Amino acid sequence: MSYAGKNLKFIRKQREWTQEEMAQQLQIKRSLVGAYEEERAEPRLEVQEAICALFNLSLEEFLFQDLSQKAGFGQEGSSNSYLDRRRAMKMDRSASIVPIVPFVPVKAAAGYLAGYADPEFLDELNTFTLPMLAPGDYRAFEIIGDSMLPTPSGSVIVGEKVASLKEVKNSNTYIVVSNADGVVYKRIITNDDHQEKLTLLSDNPLYEPYQVNSQDIVEIWKAVYVIQKAGAQPMWDVDQLAGVVNSLQDKISTLKRTMN
Image (cartoon, rainbow, N blue to C red):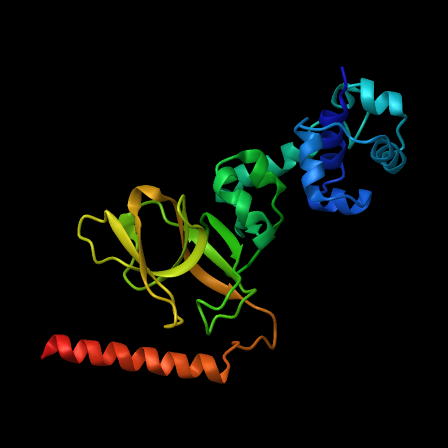
């Protein structure tokens, strides 16, 4: 029996590395690290040798010994010290003065829909703190694209967990996680008294509003802070501005016809 996948995951977490950081150390793709750890593939010999060199192991130890059970291996006693510290820190979050915010970058957004409730997936996310946050449950998401201009592409939205659709305030901005669209940043229009459908609206009028079924939504996070790089400018150009003006004129004309 080979312990390669289990050992790779264990020693990576002892170093407190993400799968991406491990991949960079081994000069392979992150997806390969995931495949090795989930035992969907066996590391090639050159990868095994690189791992052993990186962690000062023999091939025999890496392949045939369960390192998590090896006395004294890893960080100061506990074989699961990294996960234990991370989970204990999160469990103690409600008592902490400064909340800990897990960060979901764009590269992790594709897997977020499947892993948003998986403790191991969440443990892989990097975290940060913002001293101005009140106690609560927060998560941060990187957004890409121009649908929410003037909020520029690449901004990080810090959101507070919304426990129920009843807490959603009309026209406020939210991170919406749904089975249909994954992770999106939009304004929510609550024009359905029964809340069976929500209308999602972009700040950029070039994008048409659309509806999502409430039962397809798995998480909603109310935007409380927007973090962007210093000097970031909204990426409007002349053609976009002309399109916005034309779109607004069409909507005004339609509204006037409706009123008449």
